[in-house]
Length: 416
Picture 1 (tube, rainbow, N blue to C red):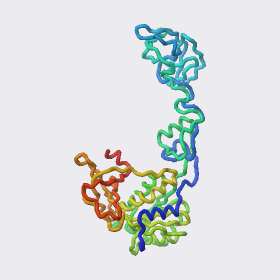
Picture 2 (spheres, one colour; picture 1 turned 45 degrees about the vertical axis):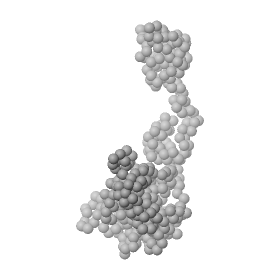
Picture 3 (cartoon, rainbow, N blue to C red; picture 1 turned 60 degrees about the vertical axis):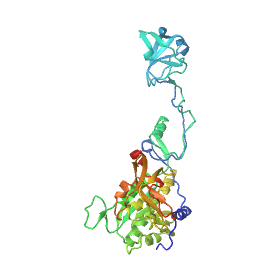
Picture 4 (tube, rainbow, N blue to C red; picture 1 turned 135 degrees about the vertical axis):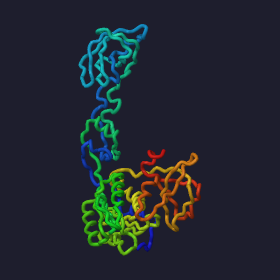
């Protein structure tokens, strides 16, 4: 195994040759469930937003020209002929010399073209005294000024957040067409692994990878399907993976991909379907044992058992595919410039990714390597803010040298 390690770029090209990830279908869901989903159609407005001329203040709807010349020491005078509240329709027609009391959000009556704020008026019974003039359309939101009828309000492929959902609600939509969430089966292997929530036997550790990878799938727009923890038994693993491939769009495993006697995952996934294993080891550190298979058109990513390695390889290889299957865009992550806190050495002949913490020191951002620890270490995941990528042909990165750090999600909120 690992007779010929592919470079990271070669591995990516190989994956791209075998898979053309895209949404599998379209589904219609309730608007309340639409946040974080991706639109599968352009949304065209069927009405103006707002649908009528509405007042933006409490006050009096008037003809603007009736207020010209009014000021505090010489107020104008109009006759109040009615009132219109928010949620009501106004059928009254207003002529010169008349005003209508109006609430914020109420439709502006026919014949009026401006609203005088209540603070600039004085009222005695139906006599209204104006202490300020207004211009045409002042304090009025015109029909269609936000969204016009037949305008494309949201585009196909747009990720829906709280603001976009608000736009859809304003258009009166209760259901919307979106791309389905890709189903990604996730499992861990190893005799030493125990599921969280169960009693921890001596010599075992709790499963980290399936939970962190399932969370990473969800962050990428997928629907994780947690299968649990399995021993390194070829027969049982084959049956489990066959069932997973029947119901899921992708499978992610962790552990069992190195060269030990219990590392059976490559041979198992290679037997599931054609063409089988397409990537068997990558010249990177960490993540060298990463194995990728194509099983009758479905991807199977077998990641290392080291938690930090598994998540790094997910970020480099798996995440882009989940994003595309969910209909999302693959965008470059946030990069920041920092100074290396110490000398960093890459592994010989391998592209090396150094997990770092970012700290401010004397007014500049410094990248401090995080110790990866043993294969079960989890502190790297919690402490690291991002990673520095060191090319295969680089001997070392000198202390104080400027480096690019690709930061993990949430860093800008946490640090900057």
